[in-house]
Image 1 (spheres, rainbow, N blue to C red):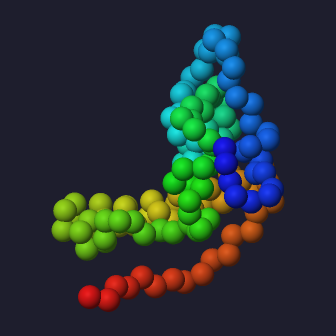
Image 2 (image 1 turned 90 degrees about the horizontal axis):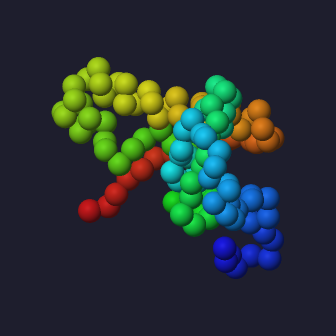
Image 3 (image 1 turned 135 degrees about the horizontal axis):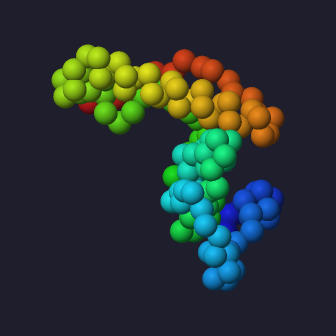
Length: 130
């Protein structure tokens, strides 16, 4: 993986690459495709529940969409809450809103047990000019 910084991330030095067919002779309970924050979080959660997982990534762990972010977590989506209400009704839109908050809690709880992290909670505003 190429990055322009002088320091290498843990993903470049610590993660063992599969090198032969022998690596696939193990029987796994779950195969997770995608090594971004969602795939990694899912793998950790399933392992905590006693499942044997394999994480399959096409390129580099944490490098795609996850690597291109500003490392922020948010509880809003591309679909607006107004659209969710119109398309699915108020109760399902509320569930939709709650899932974003729950996802942040899951990530926070998973990673606090593995590494020391600090999550700063801030209010943000989104707007457009047009």
